Amino acid sequence: MSGPRIPILMYHQIDAAPPKGTPLRGLVVSPGTFSRHMRLLHFLGYKGLSMSALMPYLRGEKSGKVFGITFDDGYENNFHSALPVLRRLRFSATCYAVAARLGQSNSWDIEEGIGQVALMDAGQLQAWIDAGQEVGSHTSHHVDLTACDPQNLESEIAGSRRLLEALLHQPGGVQHFCYPYGRFDAASLDQTIQAAYASATTTQRGRVPVPVQDGAFTLPRVLVSRSTTWVHLLLKCFTDYEDRRGVQG
Ligand SMILES: [Zn+2]
Image (tube, rainbow, N blue to C red; front, side, top):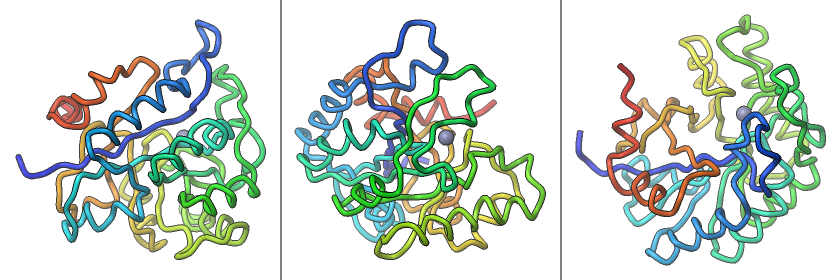
């Protein structure tokens, strides 16, 4: 396939580098790097969009120079370090929050020895929304959905949406979902569709072939890490560099 493809960028934390040797250190992008990435794409005439704003482009109903911006887990440092940049450039982004962990920390990572970092609380997520950004769901407890029984699947996928919608005032509600660890199977995919989300993102590498049809629930993304230089970013966004890496053998 060689039709148009749209990149959806995947960020996690935007913060100063943790000490060398810290697990998942690569997923912490410095505020300066994030700002340079966004200003570069803006300079090239591209507009960064939240999943709701991007959907018409992914469906092929609109065309233009756009890309998606997503943040996984809902770290507080997104609020302090990414939001000012997004506002200045009039970009929007979707932050996937862990519904039962708001205002807490990434406790799901403790067993892996990963440092604990504050997550946005409901007030900050509301301020994020009020500043033109979007909140999506990343389940209730950041679980591996492929290891859930049917009842847990319902509470993690549909239940997280109900929880977020009860806490936040977001026009249109919570419409977008992201699989923790990028893990999903037939049952979790089916549950996500049943829960009436409009899209779901994975960690599979690549840009989205347009128009998406059934693929709106298995969207690939472009990982941006600490070591992603601006040259890499351009390669990932505007060439088939990332798409080729997303093809599993
Ligand atoms: Zn996550």
